[in-house]
Length: 376
Image 1 (spheres, rainbow, N blue to C red):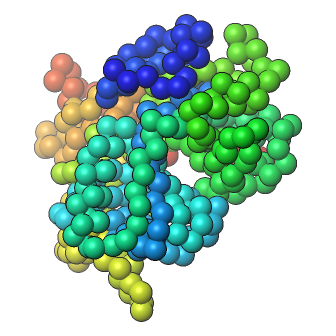
Image 2 (image 1 turned 90 degrees about the vertical axis):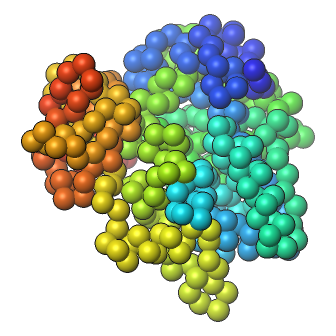
Protein backbone atom coordinates (compact mmCIF):
# COMPACT_ATOMS: atom_id res chain seq x y z
CA UNK A 1 0.00 0.00 0.00
CA UNK A 2 1.06 3.56 -0.63
CA UNK A 3 1.48 5.92 2.30
CA UNK A 4 0.83 9.64 2.39
CA UNK A 5 3.37 12.15 3.75
CA UNK A 6 1.17 12.33 6.89
CA UNK A 7 1.53 8.65 7.74
CA UNK A 8 3.56 9.30 10.90
CA UNK A 9 1.01 11.93 11.96
CA UNK A 10 -1.68 9.23 11.85
CA UNK A 11 0.39 6.81 13.90
CA UNK A 12 1.24 9.51 16.46
CA UNK A 13 -2.48 10.20 16.86
CA UNK A 14 -3.33 6.48 17.25
CA UNK A 15 -5.31 6.14 14.02
CA UNK A 16 -6.96 2.88 12.98
CA UNK A 17 -5.44 2.43 9.53
CA UNK A 18 -7.15 0.66 6.61
CA UNK A 19 -6.54 -0.05 2.93
CA UNK A 20 -8.41 2.54 0.87
CA UNK A 21 -7.96 2.00 -2.90
CA UNK A 22 -4.34 1.04 -2.37
CA UNK A 23 -3.51 3.74 0.17
CA UNK A 24 -3.00 3.15 3.90
CA UNK A 25 -5.41 5.69 5.36
CA UNK A 26 -6.94 6.50 8.77
CA UNK A 27 -10.51 5.24 9.20
CA UNK A 28 -10.91 6.62 12.73
CA UNK A 29 -8.77 8.02 15.53
CA UNK A 30 -10.95 8.25 18.65
CA UNK A 31 -14.40 7.29 17.31
CA UNK A 32 -16.42 8.04 14.18
CA UNK A 33 -19.31 9.79 15.92
CA UNK A 34 -16.97 11.89 18.06
CA UNK A 35 -14.92 12.88 15.01
CA UNK A 36 -18.09 13.76 13.08
CA UNK A 37 -19.36 15.97 15.91
CA UNK A 38 -15.90 17.56 16.31
CA UNK A 39 -16.09 18.79 12.69
CA UNK A 40 -19.67 20.02 13.03
CA UNK A 41 -19.01 21.88 16.30
CA UNK A 42 -15.41 23.07 16.00
CA UNK A 43 -12.86 21.74 13.52
CA UNK A 44 -11.30 18.60 12.09
CA UNK A 45 -8.08 17.85 10.20
CA UNK A 46 -8.32 15.37 7.30
CA UNK A 47 -5.48 13.87 5.31
CA UNK A 48 -6.65 13.86 1.69
CA UNK A 49 -3.22 13.37 0.14
CA UNK A 50 -4.40 10.16 -1.53
CA UNK A 51 -6.45 12.23 -3.96
CA UNK A 52 -4.81 12.93 -7.31
CA UNK A 53 -3.32 16.32 -8.18
CA UNK A 54 -2.57 16.95 -11.84
CA UNK A 55 -1.10 20.17 -13.25
CA UNK A 56 -1.81 21.44 -16.79
CA UNK A 57 0.35 24.10 -18.40
CA UNK A 58 0.82 25.42 -21.92
CA UNK A 59 -0.86 27.04 -24.87
CA UNK A 60 -3.78 24.62 -25.12
CA UNK A 61 -4.24 23.75 -21.43
CA UNK A 62 -7.43 25.80 -21.13
CA UNK A 63 -8.90 24.48 -24.35
CA UNK A 64 -8.15 20.90 -23.36
CA UNK A 65 -9.93 21.25 -20.02
CA UNK A 66 -12.85 22.98 -21.74
CA UNK A 67 -13.28 19.92 -23.95
CA UNK A 68 -12.62 17.35 -21.21
CA UNK A 69 -14.79 18.85 -18.43
CA UNK A 70 -18.53 19.46 -18.24
CA UNK A 71 -18.13 22.81 -16.45
CA UNK A 72 -17.03 26.01 -18.19
CA UNK A 73 -13.34 26.77 -17.72
CA UNK A 74 -12.65 29.72 -20.03
CA UNK A 75 -14.52 32.26 -17.91
CA UNK A 76 -12.78 31.24 -14.68
CA UNK A 77 -10.61 33.88 -13.07
CA UNK A 78 -7.12 33.28 -11.70
CA UNK A 79 -7.57 32.20 -8.09
CA UNK A 80 -10.89 30.49 -8.75
CA UNK A 81 -11.75 26.80 -8.57
CA UNK A 82 -14.80 24.93 -9.84
CA UNK A 83 -16.36 21.54 -9.28
CA UNK A 84 -16.84 19.66 -12.54
CA UNK A 85 -17.39 16.22 -14.03
CA UNK A 86 -15.36 14.29 -16.57
CA UNK A 87 -17.75 12.21 -18.68
CA UNK A 88 -17.53 9.36 -21.15
CA UNK A 89 -19.14 9.45 -24.60
CA UNK A 90 -22.42 7.99 -23.33
CA UNK A 91 -22.82 10.69 -20.67
CA UNK A 92 -21.68 8.53 -17.77
CA UNK A 93 -19.28 9.93 -15.18
CA UNK A 94 -15.60 9.00 -15.33
CA UNK A 95 -14.87 11.15 -12.29
CA UNK A 96 -15.84 14.30 -10.44
CA UNK A 97 -13.02 16.82 -10.08
CA UNK A 98 -12.11 20.30 -8.90
CA UNK A 99 -10.31 22.56 -11.38
CA UNK A 100 -8.09 25.41 -10.10
CA UNK A 101 -7.14 28.24 -12.46
CA UNK A 102 -3.71 29.44 -11.38
CA UNK A 103 -2.98 31.65 -14.41
CA UNK A 104 -4.07 32.07 -18.04
CA UNK A 105 -2.37 28.86 -19.17
CA UNK A 106 -1.85 27.09 -15.85
CA UNK A 107 -4.40 24.87 -14.11
CA UNK A 108 -4.50 22.27 -11.36
CA UNK A 109 -7.03 19.46 -11.13
CA UNK A 110 -7.88 17.36 -8.06
CA UNK A 111 -9.27 13.91 -8.91
CA UNK A 112 -10.45 10.94 -6.87
CA UNK A 113 -7.80 8.50 -5.69
CA UNK A 114 -9.66 5.53 -7.16
CA UNK A 115 -9.77 7.16 -10.60
CA UNK A 116 -6.36 8.83 -10.90
CA UNK A 117 -4.70 6.29 -13.19
CA UNK A 118 -7.85 5.89 -15.28
CA UNK A 119 -8.22 9.64 -15.73
CA UNK A 120 -4.54 10.14 -16.61
CA UNK A 121 -4.81 7.47 -19.31
CA UNK A 122 -8.04 9.01 -20.60
CA UNK A 123 -6.45 12.46 -20.79
CA UNK A 124 -3.39 11.13 -22.63
CA UNK A 125 -5.71 9.54 -25.20
CA UNK A 126 -7.69 12.77 -25.61
CA UNK A 127 -4.51 14.84 -25.95
CA UNK A 128 -3.30 12.63 -28.81
CA UNK A 129 -6.73 12.59 -30.44
CA UNK A 130 -7.18 16.35 -30.36
CA UNK A 131 -3.53 17.17 -31.14
CA UNK A 132 -3.29 19.89 -28.50
CA UNK A 133 -0.07 21.36 -27.10
CA UNK A 134 0.21 21.39 -23.31
CA UNK A 135 2.03 19.62 -20.50
CA UNK A 136 0.29 17.35 -18.02
CA UNK A 137 2.17 16.67 -14.78
CA UNK A 138 0.91 14.20 -12.16
CA UNK A 139 2.07 15.79 -8.90
CA UNK A 140 0.26 13.43 -6.54
CA UNK A 141 3.31 11.69 -5.08
CA UNK A 142 5.31 14.92 -4.76
CA UNK A 143 2.66 16.85 -2.84
CA UNK A 144 0.42 16.53 0.19
CA UNK A 145 -3.14 17.73 0.73
CA UNK A 146 -4.92 18.38 4.02
CA UNK A 147 -8.43 19.63 4.73
CA UNK A 148 -9.28 21.72 7.79
CA UNK A 149 -13.06 21.75 8.19
CA UNK A 150 -15.44 23.16 10.78
CA UNK A 151 -17.08 26.37 12.03
CA UNK A 152 -14.00 27.51 14.00
CA UNK A 153 -11.39 26.84 11.32
CA UNK A 154 -11.51 30.19 9.53
CA UNK A 155 -11.29 32.09 12.81
CA UNK A 156 -8.24 30.03 13.76
CA UNK A 157 -6.54 30.62 10.40
CA UNK A 158 -7.32 34.33 10.73
CA UNK A 159 -4.76 34.51 13.55
CA UNK A 160 -2.01 33.79 11.00
CA UNK A 161 -3.39 35.18 7.73
CA UNK A 162 -5.67 38.07 6.88
CA UNK A 163 -6.08 36.97 3.29
CA UNK A 164 -7.51 33.46 3.74
CA UNK A 165 -10.58 34.46 5.82
CA UNK A 166 -11.47 37.04 3.16
CA UNK A 167 -11.55 34.42 0.38
CA UNK A 168 -14.94 33.61 -1.05
CA UNK A 169 -16.08 30.02 -1.39
CA UNK A 170 -14.31 28.20 -4.23
CA UNK A 171 -11.49 30.73 -4.34
CA UNK A 172 -7.87 30.05 -3.47
CA UNK A 173 -4.64 31.87 -2.68
CA UNK A 174 -1.01 30.91 -3.14
CA UNK A 175 0.95 31.47 0.06
CA UNK A 176 4.62 31.16 0.92
CA UNK A 177 5.77 29.16 3.95
CA UNK A 178 9.54 29.53 4.20
CA UNK A 179 10.68 28.15 0.81
CA UNK A 180 7.48 26.19 0.11
CA UNK A 181 4.42 27.38 -1.81
CA UNK A 182 0.98 26.45 -0.49
CA UNK A 183 -2.31 26.55 -2.38
CA UNK A 184 -5.04 27.30 0.15
CA UNK A 185 -8.60 26.98 -1.17
CA UNK A 186 -11.88 27.66 0.60
CA UNK A 187 -13.35 24.33 -0.39
CA UNK A 188 -14.29 21.09 1.34
CA UNK A 189 -16.37 17.93 1.36
CA UNK A 190 -18.15 18.10 4.71
CA UNK A 191 -20.85 20.77 4.40
CA UNK A 192 -18.82 23.00 6.75
CA UNK A 193 -16.67 26.04 6.13
CA UNK A 194 -12.93 25.52 5.99
CA UNK A 195 -9.94 25.17 3.69
CA UNK A 196 -8.00 22.59 1.74
CA UNK A 197 -4.23 23.02 1.51
CA UNK A 198 -1.93 21.62 -1.19
CA UNK A 199 1.83 21.79 -0.60
CA UNK A 200 5.10 19.97 -1.35
CA UNK A 201 5.27 16.67 0.53
CA UNK A 202 8.59 17.62 2.10
CA UNK A 203 7.05 20.69 3.72
CA UNK A 204 4.15 18.93 5.43
CA UNK A 205 5.85 18.69 8.82
CA UNK A 206 6.61 22.42 8.95
CA UNK A 207 3.15 23.29 7.63
CA UNK A 208 1.34 21.19 10.23
CA UNK A 209 3.34 22.82 13.01
CA UNK A 210 2.44 26.22 11.58
CA UNK A 211 -1.26 25.45 11.09
CA UNK A 212 -1.64 23.74 14.45
CA UNK A 213 0.58 25.90 16.63
CA UNK A 214 -0.96 26.30 20.06
CA UNK A 215 -3.47 23.49 19.44
CA UNK A 216 -3.27 20.37 21.63
CA UNK A 217 -5.18 17.88 19.51
CA UNK A 218 -5.06 15.24 22.25
CA UNK A 219 -7.57 17.25 24.30
CA UNK A 220 -11.29 16.52 23.69
CA UNK A 221 -12.04 20.27 23.72
CA UNK A 222 -9.31 21.20 21.22
CA UNK A 223 -10.33 23.55 18.42
CA UNK A 224 -8.89 21.10 15.88
CA UNK A 225 -8.64 17.33 16.13
CA UNK A 226 -7.85 14.71 13.47
CA UNK A 227 -10.73 13.02 11.64
CA UNK A 228 -10.71 9.93 9.45
CA UNK A 229 -12.42 8.52 6.38
CA UNK A 230 -15.37 7.26 8.44
CA UNK A 231 -16.40 10.74 9.56
CA UNK A 232 -15.62 12.15 6.12
CA UNK A 233 -18.25 9.81 4.66
CA UNK A 234 -21.00 10.56 7.20
CA UNK A 235 -20.31 14.30 6.92
CA UNK A 236 -20.52 14.30 3.11
CA UNK A 237 -23.72 12.20 3.24
CA UNK A 238 -25.39 14.71 5.58
CA UNK A 239 -24.28 17.46 3.17
CA UNK A 240 -25.86 15.57 0.23
CA UNK A 241 -22.54 15.42 -1.63
CA UNK A 242 -22.08 12.61 -4.18
CA UNK A 243 -19.34 10.00 -3.91
CA UNK A 244 -17.82 8.24 -6.89
CA UNK A 245 -18.86 4.59 -6.93
CA UNK A 246 -22.10 5.47 -5.17
CA UNK A 247 -23.92 8.46 -6.70
CA UNK A 248 -21.49 8.79 -9.61
CA UNK A 249 -20.17 6.20 -12.06
CA UNK A 250 -19.44 5.24 -15.66
CA UNK A 251 -22.92 3.70 -16.07
CA UNK A 252 -24.76 6.53 -14.31
CA UNK A 253 -26.06 9.37 -16.46
CA UNK A 254 -24.53 12.66 -15.28
CA UNK A 255 -27.94 14.37 -15.30
CA UNK A 256 -29.18 11.90 -12.66
CA UNK A 257 -26.64 12.80 -9.98
CA UNK A 258 -27.97 16.06 -8.57
CA UNK A 259 -25.07 18.16 -9.88
CA UNK A 260 -26.69 19.80 -12.92
CA UNK A 261 -24.97 23.09 -11.93
CA UNK A 262 -21.69 21.48 -13.00
CA UNK A 263 -22.92 20.53 -16.48
CA UNK A 264 -22.85 23.35 -19.07
CA UNK A 265 -24.89 22.02 -21.99
CA UNK A 266 -24.56 25.46 -23.64
CA UNK A 267 -20.75 25.29 -23.65
CA UNK A 268 -20.70 24.81 -27.43
CA UNK A 269 -22.38 28.17 -28.07
CA UNK A 270 -20.48 31.31 -29.01
CA UNK A 271 -17.50 31.98 -31.25
CA UNK A 272 -15.09 29.86 -29.18
CA UNK A 273 -17.56 27.27 -28.01
CA UNK A 274 -16.36 23.74 -27.25
CA UNK A 275 -18.16 20.41 -27.16
CA UNK A 276 -17.16 18.40 -24.10
CA UNK A 277 -16.96 14.61 -24.11
CA UNK A 278 -20.46 13.25 -23.50
CA UNK A 279 -22.28 16.50 -24.32
CA UNK A 280 -24.26 15.10 -27.23
CA UNK A 281 -25.45 12.12 -25.19
CA UNK A 282 -26.52 14.40 -22.33
CA UNK A 283 -28.31 16.78 -24.70
CA UNK A 284 -30.22 13.81 -26.08
CA UNK A 285 -31.18 12.72 -22.56
CA UNK A 286 -32.45 16.20 -21.77
CA UNK A 287 -34.37 16.46 -25.07
CA UNK A 288 -36.11 13.18 -24.27
CA UNK A 289 -37.39 14.58 -20.97
CA UNK A 290 -34.40 13.86 -18.74
CA UNK A 291 -33.48 10.79 -16.70
CA UNK A 292 -36.34 8.65 -15.41
CA UNK A 293 -34.66 8.46 -12.01
CA UNK A 294 -32.73 11.18 -10.23
CA UNK A 295 -30.95 11.49 -6.91
CA UNK A 296 -33.17 12.01 -3.87
CA UNK A 297 -32.76 12.05 -0.09
CA UNK A 298 -34.60 9.90 2.43
CA UNK A 299 -35.14 10.00 6.17
CA UNK A 300 -35.59 6.50 7.60
CA UNK A 301 -37.82 5.60 10.55
CA UNK A 302 -36.31 3.65 13.41
CA UNK A 303 -32.61 3.05 14.04
CA UNK A 304 -31.58 0.77 11.16
CA UNK A 305 -29.73 2.35 8.24
CA UNK A 306 -30.32 1.62 4.56
CA UNK A 307 -27.16 0.67 2.67
CA UNK A 308 -26.03 0.93 -0.93
CA UNK A 309 -27.93 -1.43 -3.23
CA UNK A 310 -31.10 -1.65 -1.14
CA UNK A 311 -34.22 -1.56 -3.34
CA UNK A 312 -36.65 1.34 -2.94
CA UNK A 313 -40.31 0.36 -3.37
CA UNK A 314 -43.75 1.92 -3.24
CA UNK A 315 -46.84 -0.23 -3.14
CA UNK A 316 -44.74 -3.30 -3.84
CA UNK A 317 -43.30 -1.79 -7.03
CA UNK A 318 -39.58 -1.11 -7.44
CA UNK A 319 -39.08 2.66 -7.89
CA UNK A 320 -35.40 3.20 -7.10
CA UNK A 321 -32.20 2.07 -5.44
CA UNK A 322 -30.19 3.33 -2.45
CA UNK A 323 -26.70 4.66 -3.23
CA UNK A 324 -25.53 5.76 0.25
CA UNK A 325 -26.89 5.50 3.77
CA UNK A 326 -25.82 5.97 7.37
CA UNK A 327 -27.09 6.92 10.82
CA UNK A 328 -26.82 10.73 10.95
CA UNK A 329 -24.91 11.84 14.07
CA UNK A 330 -26.20 15.39 13.60
CA UNK A 331 -29.89 14.63 12.97
CA UNK A 332 -30.11 11.57 15.21
CA UNK A 333 -31.87 9.46 12.59
CA UNK A 334 -30.82 7.23 9.67
CA UNK A 335 -30.56 8.98 6.31
CA UNK A 336 -29.98 7.77 2.77
CA UNK A 337 -29.55 8.93 -0.81
CA UNK A 338 -30.64 7.05 -3.88
CA UNK A 339 -31.96 7.19 -7.42
CA UNK A 340 -35.75 7.53 -7.36
CA UNK A 341 -38.38 7.92 -10.07
CA UNK A 342 -38.73 11.63 -10.76
CA UNK A 343 -42.51 11.63 -10.17
CA UNK A 344 -41.96 10.61 -6.54
CA UNK A 345 -39.52 13.37 -5.54
CA UNK A 346 -41.99 15.54 -3.59
CA UNK A 347 -40.80 15.91 0.04
CA UNK A 348 -42.85 13.74 2.37
CA UNK A 349 -43.51 11.01 -0.20
CA UNK A 350 -43.58 7.66 1.62
CA UNK A 351 -41.39 4.80 0.38
CA UNK A 352 -40.29 1.38 1.61
CA UNK A 353 -36.65 0.32 1.49
CA UNK A 354 -36.06 -3.41 1.13
CA UNK A 355 -32.74 -4.30 2.73
CA UNK A 356 -33.02 -7.99 1.92
CA UNK A 357 -33.45 -8.70 5.63
CA UNK A 358 -36.46 -6.50 6.22
CA UNK A 359 -38.33 -3.41 5.08
CA UNK A 360 -37.63 0.08 6.38
CA UNK A 361 -40.16 2.92 6.21
CA UNK A 362 -38.84 6.15 4.78
CA UNK A 363 -39.88 9.55 3.48
CA UNK A 364 -38.41 11.64 0.70
CA UNK A 365 -36.70 14.81 1.87
CA UNK A 366 -34.90 17.66 0.15
CA UNK A 367 -31.12 17.55 -0.14
CA UNK A 368 -28.90 18.39 1.61
CA UNK A 369 -29.96 16.92 4.94
CA UNK A 370 -27.71 19.37 6.75
CA UNK A 371 -27.02 23.00 5.91
CA UNK A 372 -24.24 24.97 7.51
CA UNK A 373 -25.69 27.62 9.87
CA UNK A 374 -25.34 31.15 8.57
CA UNK A 375 -22.80 33.34 10.35
CA UNK A 376 -24.29 35.67 12.92
